[in-house]
Image (cartoon, rainbow, N blue to C red; front, top):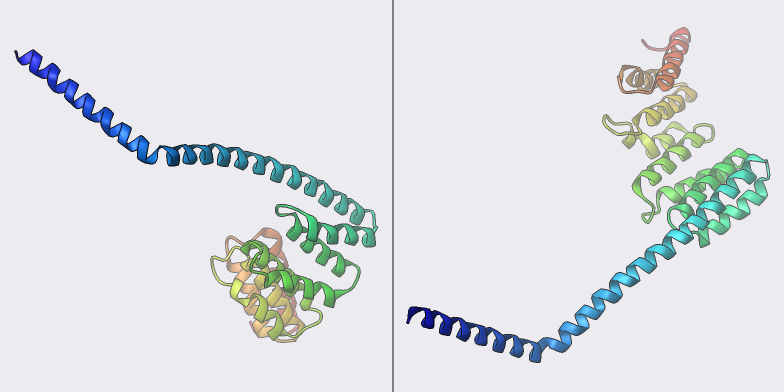
Length: 223
């Protein structure tokens, strides 16, 4: 008798579950089907997008390398034309890399003001990744050493000369050179000493800083 009751109870439970599923499907079946289709279409679309993006990024990479080749061959104007086209039509990271390289070419052909302006524009473009913006700001500051006063250089990079900042070594070197150029030897010494005393400073940067410290001492600068 107990077995029959158990069987009866199971059958009732199965019937209830079946009725519940029927009601759910009747009410929500069309929506469930639509969601399933959207998932399939979305997955396929994502794969198509990835393929399209990868293909276009690869093409942009080829264009970027071609522009670099033109620059190495001394074909500056042709390289600038190619980089300008890549800035507006490229995909992935290549448009901003083209902007950086174009600014470098401007500096190499002696147009320092245009190069500084280009680097500063990149540094202030919030759509550009932070690390590239910092690199552009630092590059512009280095160019400003010969054309601007210490305050202008400091305004661009001093915030990046703090302990722990990955760009502090180059920032400190730029600040030291700007101070040295302004004949502010005590301040120059402070920046170069920070480089020499930083155990994480690259060897070549530390060596240059030590040479500058020796020059400052020979010139009678504060010790």
